[in-house]
Length: 228
Ligand SMILES: [Zn+2]
Image 1 (cartoon, rainbow, N blue to C red):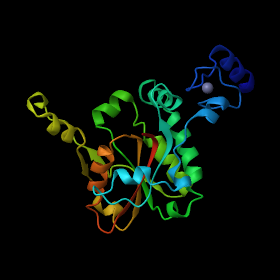
Image 2 (cartoon, rainbow, N blue to C red):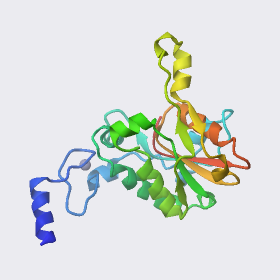
Image 3 (tube, rainbow, N blue to C red):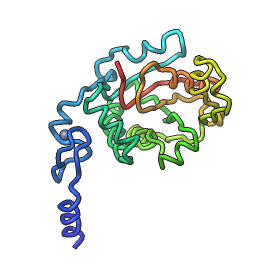
Image 4 (spheres, helix red, strand yellow):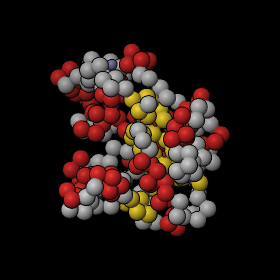
């Protein structure tokens, strides 16, 4: 009965590829097979390229840094991330997390990770969106590595109200303000900090700087995508 009902639902509401908007086959999830083959991969954990790690040189100490995909304007990655953030396609987050997590679990340098921490959203923004787009990704990676996903370690600080009168630089700095809410929870640990997309690295730098207040902490980074 459930079988028939599901088949009927698929017929009435076919699942659409988040890359090309084509109809997904019964065994396809999130993106179709051609899109999966075409999507540009970053995969620094495989190539050992320091492309992402280099962004943080001289700013904050990072052990390992990788991204799953490359972000290109009007590309499949942009479409995926857009649907994740603005079209309520929350399941894209764990889909990418399972993908990257499976790969990281095979790599020695990532097997020393003790816990995963996601970049937080401001609580009002999370309420409006209904979810933090990074949580499913982080949880899936934590699951693949057999470690905990820690919430409430970092908190996004609320914006102040007189933004208009501040300089542009000051506003940018405040936009990336985070605080460390639980220092003890991450002391003596190797933390994998995760986010959706890295461009200038300002958000991740701000979060990593906060995490570093904890004693004897090591930080690595993993993102869904990198904008090169
Ligand atoms: Zn497709």
